[in-house]
Image (cartoon, rainbow over all chains, first blue to last red; front, side, top):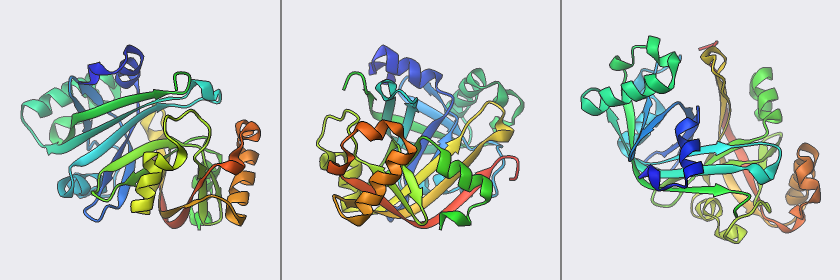
Length: 144
Length: 144
């Protein structure tokens, strides 16, 4: 459960506007992209949205990797020049793609609540990546 | 060569204060961490520095993954709420660890030039990850 994180880490996870999703293909070649996302309990949702992409959603490298290999990592981090204030949260999970259904509707609702930008995008018609929590840990320079 | 990127993307790559390094272990489980880095020609350098870590440098997951599997991805991205201004650069490369020698000295010099914070850290004594360029591509919402 994400709520097992410290209160400060959980707040950062919920409020962060961007995270980084790492996937790997069947040959172990890693890939990483910035994502918009929302969390709920033990799941994290990120849409294959309408930000301009050359490929159809399911041809995107992240989607193809997840189909081949559902293991993913998601990082939320905070950078500033005072390195005593660096912090990050690293999540490992198993990812799946949802095209419709109850979880897809929940994802759309949570994403639109968090990002006003999504309220005018047709997320209903787009696949969502659902990352199911396996582990989460947080790191903060000041505590380490 | 990183200089094959568009001038705007190359500027972003050189000036970005933080990037994200994705690695994968021998089972294809991805991992991602924020990194400080410097670039030069066809190589990117990031130290296993003195920011507090619980493990000795070579026990860090990123280092263990690279020893098992040198394929890595590095992402530099820019986020803002106006999604027309989103942009990122994704690099694929092969990583190795350097403990000393000419490339290690070059890495230390470039990292100290870019980050004043490193001028008072004993980078000479720390391993550096060297990522050799395989490919780089940039994406910008406004062009896509």
